[in-house]
Image (cartoon, rainbow, N blue to C red; front, side):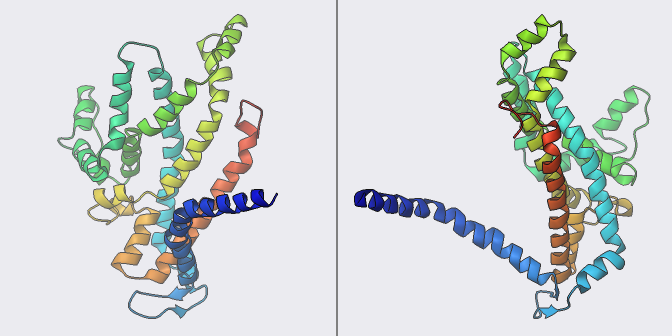
Length: 302
């Protein structure tokens, strides 16, 4: 019994040793900055002065005085509401199409996955060329069908749809997740559905879709968080964070960046970061609460 206790202690020490890098990294690079931002959100801090406690002053200014805060929140919500379902549906569509057992199908999977591994800045510059009102390929293709293309990044009504269209182009990551999930759906379920007279749509609706709902749930959660964190696209495509025409691409993170590193209003920026954290947390909790109503697991709902 004594030997077993000593072995357990030795194994525990080794276990702590192996997880120590993660714990140290989490405390230093995640928990520490979060606590610092939480404290700093109640101060008037600009990197060159001491933190002066001002209570809820930053939040009062944010909600009552900063009109760009509401504009940035609206832009981010707009992007999230349309981007998440569209990219999810498109990823599932690609996965179903590319899950067929056809010769050369792996080549097409690679083609659709390639945009995901390209450099972000290079992709944004490429899309700026593609969306050029006068010489861009997108408007050129539309002109073949006698359709006058919009000004895209120069028209406030089309800037956010342009970014959503660009994000659809990089749906290859989620596509691979769905393909892997589709390949694990038991063939017996499809055979049983066929015996019951189910056609292709019925099999997708009543067999495929329920079986991939756990991955859809994961994709929706991560896509929602990622959409609220959109920054690089708008920063590169709006002349170093200017927000585009009529601030139509001034997203929440971009506005927070400008406050922190252009205006050096760090206390206010940290208050914005805490607000974003609360918003994303609430949306994640809502998704977790709604999940049992539509997410199905092979062994039953969890």
